[in-house]
Image (cartoon, rainbow, N blue to C red):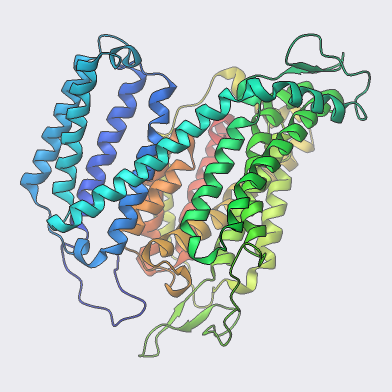
Length: 546
């Protein structure tokens, strides 16, 4: 049951066709995107450049979502115009036919031919126009949607161009980077620092070769793009021109962080384990640096009057108490509300500690119990913010969780090679450590992870899609837009198992809508993970745990 109400007005009578056009076209374009993604790895023989093209595509999707939210009343009741939907499908077929003409050679070679570029470009433009015509309620909105698409595509192209441009800068700063890493490493190394070949630095015990991919300039591109987006989206609350200083500050910080990352990588290889340094720390430390510098810079700037127009906090709020219950309408009907920090902080803690534990692990996440303890402490410290009064157990969420487990087993990637499964088998640690690790792993899968993820995806993201101020939306309220966005985001979190993640996310959203209870979504999620844990332990398919 998906309910559409406004937290500020008297609920109106539902229409049977609410969000039908958005749902139909959204599902159709999702299928088309999956077809294109499948073709890039098989039929078209495209390389990573095709994958980079997905960045503007994702930003265009975000821009369309913003446009729909702005004109929600017009899109909500728009009926499905099936002849226009058929035209959109035909246009996609035309695009497929155009791509088929250039499929005899690799895509990057075929697109060098002007005729092929014109053919594919014209077919793509026709596909876009047919989609817009099928989507917009009136002609006046088509111009705005085109402008949003162009701006999103331009920003996405800037992201991609920034990434490629910053990689080319490695040749200008490589000497300085190598020299500074050597200076930082010397006081802590177990012997004299050596540089036997260009771009190789370390000691006789452990040394690394620094390529342009690991030079830190991708981080510079990501941080500068993140901060540029922050300056644009929050421009009304920032002080200019001094706020422009945030970009060079972020660039300098991420470059310094990369020097520390390379030095730490070598020290981990020397004193801890070369395997952990290569398999764990190397692949994770860059993201830790990016998240720390990017979000840390934004957080610090938001609290500094030099950069931000700070406003006094409002007092006299409508919260009835720590249980998060307040009056939602004029009839005195109480609804459960959750503050945004209570929904977001546990998930952020889970993400951060996951990155840290994986950085110091080699394949097998031996530090998983630390992850469970950290999230449990955060949840316990916020326990007063979670309204559980009046919730009653039901077997419906359990059944939804069982169905979700079946979907996951059907659609998720199969078990890995025997060697990979053996590397993740905790039994090799011997008793009692293997047993204790398994207990912590099951507790994390069944308790802390479902709570943290449901608080974020069904507790925060769903309400954020309904209202810019998520705190004003009662828990359990759901729209088609929130249903789709939260489910797709949940699927994206699961990497290669994204399709299974999307469908399972939809089922968990259904558990939320059944009684408008976030606890039901948590129970469904916990049931799925409990069944998966039992399957993994019973069959030894350790790769299914990831």
